[in-house]
Each structure stands twice: as C-alpha cells, then as structure tokens.
Length: 151
Ligand SMILES: Nc1ncnc2c1ncn2[C@@H]1O[C@H](COP(=O)(O)OP(=O)(O)OP(=O)(O)O)[C@@H](O)[C@H]1O
Image (cartoon, rainbow, N blue to C red; front, side, top):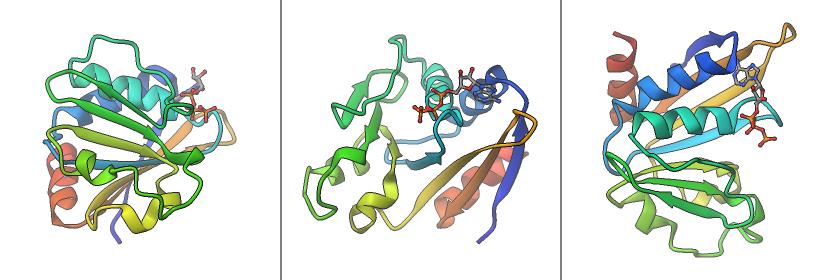
C-alpha cells in the first residue's frame, strides 16, 4: 500500500498539517488515528478541528468513547480503547456513514466494524523529539484525497 511520510518538528507543525488536511475532508470520511503515548494524536485532532472551523476545545474522548463537535462538518472523535468486545455494536456505522468526519483512536480494536475504505494516520516519536506523520490511504477515495493534499 502506498504511504506518505512527513516530519513534524513541533506541535504547531502537526496542527498546521491536520488543519490543512481538514480542508480536503468530506462527509463520511473516516480516519484511523494511531500513535504511541504522547506522539501527538490529540494535537493532530485539535488541528483537524481548527480546520473544520470547530470552536470548542477538543480533548480525549477516552471515557465517553465518542465526542461530537459541530463545525463546517461535524467531527466525531472516538476512542474505542474501552470498547470491551470488538463485536459490541455501539452503532458506529451511523457515524461512519453520517454527515461528519470520524476520527477513531485504537481503530484496530474494532477492525470488523470499520468501513472498507479508510485513511490511516500514524504518528511516531523520532529519536530527536520530532514526530513522523504517515498517511496510509486505503481505497480510491483516500488515494485521491492524498493526491489533492500533496499537490
Ligand atoms: N511535532 C510534534 N507534534 C505533536 N506534538 C508534539 C510535537 N513535538 C512535541 N509535541 C508535544 O508532545 C505532546 C503530544 O501530546 P498529545 O496529547 O497530542 O499526544 P497523544 O498522542 O494524544 O497522547 P496520549 O496518547 O497520551 O493521549 C504535546 O505536549 C506536544 O506539545
């Protein structure tokens, strides 16, 4: 699978990156967001929210599983870490197929319930303190999105 790598030297760069990415998102887009502790998942999502013109502060939905924000498009921010059973049906489809953009943290835990096409964003801590951002488009929609984003 094709993937695209970027280096972010500070949190503002990660925010600018996701803020710009948000401009290319459409209703029904789903992003699987992965990264180690402190890699910048929240920072990334905050940037995405800025790009979607969301005014509320975005923070981790760990205990609520899903948080919804209104903007140019709604943002559904999910953290499925606490979903006990990957077959548990919490009605994720309604979000994935809804009017907004979904960001899922720990997406692999609900693999069976994810849409076939998805954009995976992986954040890695580099030895020098920078972060590596990797975009992995799965499916035509996200290949197109990455192409536009990279122009
Ligand atoms: N290039 C960078 N991109 C993102 N964050 C960075 C970068 N450089 C330093 N940081 C710092 O790293 C921290 C990232 O925290 P953040 O909460 O976004 O990570 P997280 O992946 O959501 O962590 P957790 O899994 O603990 O919730 C912030 O304090 C941020 O300022």
